[in-house]
Image (cartoon, rainbow, N blue to C red):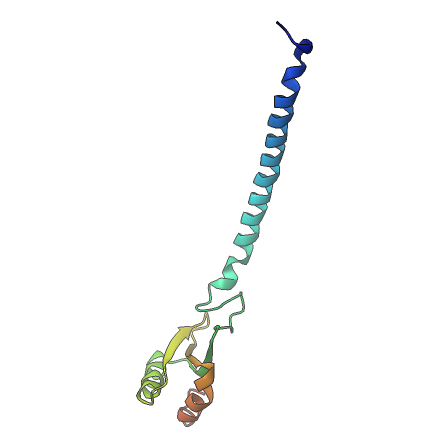
Length: 118
C-alpha cells in the first residue's frame, strides 16, 4: 500500500513551502509600500498639487495670486466676463491662486495687470 516510503509527500510539501515563502515576500513588500506612502502623503495635501510639487497645477497656470479671497473672487469674475475660464486654489500659507489654462494665461495676466493681486 505504501508507495516509495512517503516520497509522495515531498511534492505537496515543496508546493506549500513555496507558496508560504512567496506569501511572506509579497506581504513584506506590501508593508514596505504602505510605510512609504504614509511618509509622502503630506506632499499631496496642498490643494491641487500634482506629483507632490505644491506649485504644479497640471494644465492650469496661476494668473494672479492674492492673500484676499474676495479679491480672488473678483479677479475670477473679471476673467469670466472676458470669456476666460478660471478657478481658484488655496495653498497652506493662505494665498489664493486664480488659475487659468496655459493658452489663456498671457491674456488673463494682461486683464488683471492693474490689479494689486499680481
